[in-house]
Image 1 (tube, rainbow, N blue to C red):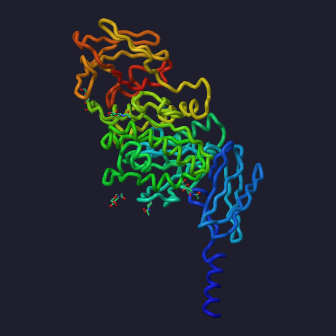
Image 2 (image 1 turned 90 degrees about the vertical axis):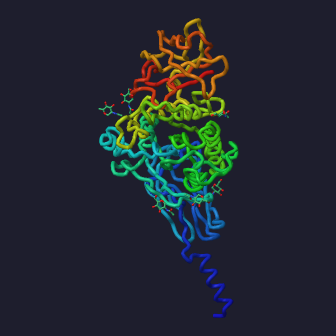
Image 3 (image 1 turned 45 degrees about the horizontal axis):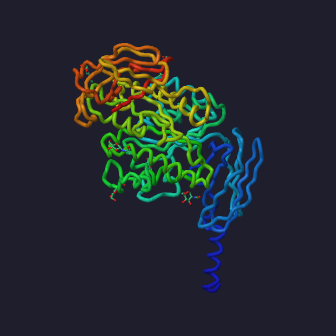
Amino acid sequence: MSLRLRALFILTACLLGCDAKVRLASYYGDHMVLQKSPARAVLWGYGPEGAHVTVSLSGPIQLRTSPVTVTKGIWRVTLDPVEPGGPYMLMVSSESNTITLKDVLFGDIWVCGGQSNMQFQTSRVFNASSELALAPKYPHVRPFQAALNVSETELPDLVQVQIPWSVPTAGVMSEFSAVCWLFGRYLYDVLKYPIGLVESCWGGTPVEAWSSSRALQQCKLDRMIGGPRNDSILWNSMIHPLLNMTIYGAIWYQGEANTDYHPNQYNCSFPAMIDDWRMAFHQGSGGQTDPDFPFGFVQLSTCTKNSTSEKYPDIRWHQTADTGFVPNSRMKKTFMAVALDLPDESSPYGTIHPRDKQDVAYRLTLGARAVAYNQKHVPFLGPFPKEILRLPNSIIVHYDQAISVTSSKDIYEICCSKTACGLNSLWVPAPILSWVSASVRISTASCKGSSIAGLRYAWKDWPCDFKACPVYSANKVLPAPPFISN
Ligand SMILES: *[C@@H]1O[C@H](CO)[C@@H](O)[C@H](O)[C@H]1NC(C)=O
Ligand SMILES: *[C@@H]1O[C@H](CO)[C@@H](O)[C@H](O)[C@H]1NC(C)=O
Ligand SMILES: *[C@@H]1O[C@H](CO)[C@@H](O)[C@H](O)[C@H]1NC(C)=O
Ligand SMILES: *[C@@H]1O[C@H](CO)[C@@H](O)[C@H](O)[C@H]1NC(C)=O
Ligand SMILES: *[C@@H]1O[C@H](CO)[C@@H](O)[C@H](O)[C@H]1NC(C)=O
Ligand SMILES: *[C@@H]1O[C@H](CO)[C@@H](O)[C@H](O)[C@H]1NC(C)=O
């Protein structure tokens, strides 16, 4: 064989195969959940240049895509919409090989992000063994977990998978995020169709690590390195790779790390990250993921008992873009689980990691039902003031709903000042005097006749004992979120 011929031979052989087989991206596999109708699931993977790839489904319905050509080593298809359910066999075939994935379901995909309280494993929650014993009863709530990896550049695919798509067992779920799994389970109880849970979170990480440089620029946060984690480093490796799958929504439990890192910008960086994820998932999925997909989050729980630091209250407030509640005009299609009444003084994992994740997930589910699934008449917002009235010796707080109150001398505080309250204002306790169905009367005696410029509620790291904050919804399910008013 002449040299030229030999070179041609090798080239042709490589085109058809070398080691070249069609493969799927890391987050597709047996037992996976794909996004159901009306959205269309996106599948992609790798293959030899020029190969033709066809994806077909067989199960409750049969479906076959037209062939797509591998270009620059990548192929991608968008399935027709598929109703919830399964199981399906999914075949990816090309000239070189065929891959068969079994036990594939269609349902809603939720991404679970954040730091250690999202990562907090189910084996560590209260009643862990009875929760884990329920795993086999929820075969259609399926976990997947991205491994903890970093990257200085945006990656097309995950570096590594920690838990591949699995049918839940006690063993698998013990390692999986408790908030993510409980949320999926409670949702399944209501929706009765498959739920796919994609855990991608990492303890100790600030919001900047999960934000693209686009999002950081929105808040004039120039790319920083050497913080707790480099900016964008987890966005690059643990979120960007996921953009190409179709998802339904995301839940998020993070903020503790930002009590010490750019805390004053969190009212910008958090909403900006949500906007950016929405835009990027929409684009990455070729328009299949909603451009305003629902985003739920947990308002910070507690960390240090008796602390007088305002770091936690500040971040809680910033989590709502400084309005106290969500959704609001800055944060549309969002929902929040208030958790400041769920402290855990004897948590073996540190007080920053309260073990009651059931109530956290349950409250998130209420928000998801109302905001993400438009279920009417699902109460999900705790009482919030709609009017604050100044009387000669007291203040009346009118809430937006009927309340259940226990008395307190110091859960409300007032700021005695003629001008607006600032950083160094003196806040003093304002005892509850009385209450009726939807309003509370608070004493202003501590200001001793001077002007009152502000009122705040539960503005403490650790404002109350377990489920014992002074103001709840009438049925005692939803705590009043903290507020500050000037
Ligand atoms: C990715 O994360 C896994 C699990 O944390 C770790 O074992 C592995 O070494 C990481 N890989 C890289 C390339 O950093
Ligand atoms: C953060 O960035 C610096 C500078 O580029 C780099 O040396 C360091 O390895 C990065 N940290 C991580 C965790 O990748
Ligand atoms: C965010 O909060 C800081 C104080 O912590 C405040 O100065 C700033 O005006 C707020 N920004 C926005 C966009 O609300
Ligand atoms: C995935 O989405 C990213 C971001 O939109 C895009 O750059 C990339 O080309 C997509 N990859 C595939 C395989 O579609
Ligand atoms: C908090 O304060 C109470 C009352 O002063 C005290 O009994 C308790 O030991 C303190 N707890 C901590 C963790 O500091
Ligand atoms: C743990 O189980 C007990 C007994 O069933 C129950 O009263 C308690 O509420 C459970 N705790 C949580 C956090 O679910």
